[in-house]
Image 1: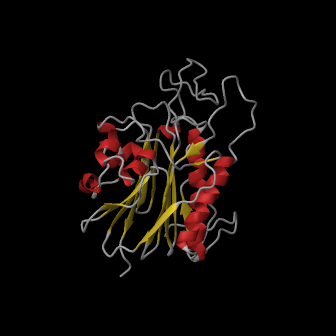
Image 2: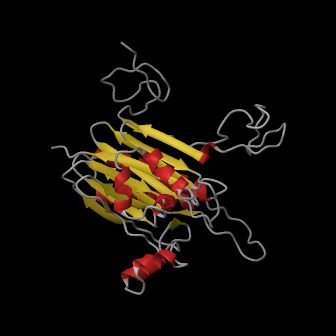
Image 3: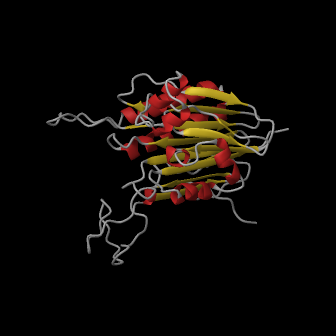
Amino acid sequence: MDTLKCPECFAPVAAEDRFCEACGRNLLVRRTPLGGPTGPAQASCILCGSPDIDDEDYCTQCGRHQPSARDRVEYALGAVSGVSDRGKRRARNEDSMAFGHVAGKGVAAVVCDGVASSERAEQASQAAADAAVDVLLNALIDTADPEQAMVDAVAASCSAVEQLVELEPMEAGGRGVAPSCTFVSALVTENSVTIGWVGDSRAYWLSDEGSKQLTTDDTWAAQLVAEGVLTEEQARTDRRAHVLSRWIGADAGRVEPQVVTLKPTSPGVFLLCSDGLHNYRPEPEDLQPLLPCGPEEFVKVALDAGGHDNITVVLVPFAPAD
């Protein structure tokens, strides 16, 4: 029989151990890597093959800039899986995802989309996702109230993004926009799911029994639709369609998520995504045909449609305990 090892330090552990005696890691918890992928996508230059890549991902031999490891990110933990892709038009991937599970307790997943017009958008999205998923995993361990946990997770994300702000002298003509991002997350237990969001990243429920969008976009256009000023069709082509009315960032003021809890009675999949997907497939019925597929196929649909933005998709399967 294979010897069990700690995933952190690879020390031998027993099946009944809850913590690794060597490094102290909680063996009941698994999550995506803290900080996400860093550095170039491969160890040697894509042009000349040299292994000498500097800290800014340039080859010191031929000067070619190397693809970032963030350009295409794929994670899978058991049945939960996610893909984040730079797309075809963006210079870098400013989306981030983080997810994990607690054995016998449930799953926590977060998708954040860095606001492209802000400073260090990719750092903001990664910091927000990491901070939130840690709070949600701890809530699963403690069997805490899921809706309060979602509020706490967003507060942790806000704090993490605010810490990225550096005090710099104002430059002539103005100052940079504070790091900021959108946020959507799911806290899934054996009988229910709690969804929380800030901004225009979305959550969907996909099921053979019926699919639906679970979130409402925090955008000026969506607000005008709610007020009856615009129709949904007009909103899609309005120049304000993607102007956020709420976001996570040092310049966002006090932020609390919109939160909803559901108790599905049939099996299905919870889909979390950035607008790189729902810009092309906005309606639940547009996504329904992809239900049997993994996140790679959802991302491929957006890429084939043009891939104008970063695309991130996380899928969390769900089956009621009974």
